[in-house]
Length: 159
Image 1 (tube, rainbow, N blue to C red):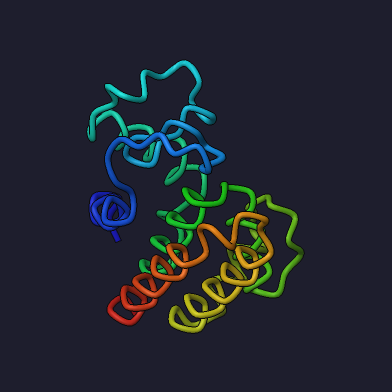
Image 2: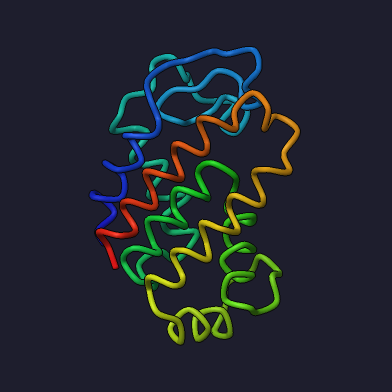
């Protein structure tokens, strides 16, 4: 999967500018939060600016180009929504290797040993379990479930 396709899919989940008091990220635009990027003018952030941030700080950080196509999107979306280390840990748990949050040859070999469809389903199961335990599940859970349901459909297309 190319980054461009993954980014377009991600933008289907992430909208334009919002500033919701219940959102722990605070002011957000294109899914880029003020909490994570305190020196960025979030309100004036363009889609192209967001795309550069997502490529540099998320796609490249999760080694998406080394993953099977469908898995790369799932992990990218998970990292954007819940953090890079969390996404990598849950991918490692899905692969049944030590979930230390650091990508290396053991994790890569485990990914390569599993079928893409099995790995997509296992990552999404890990993601649901993780999100269900979050304190803001009662308020955001419905939206997260919808997001993951859409990702299941993408997973069916990709594998």
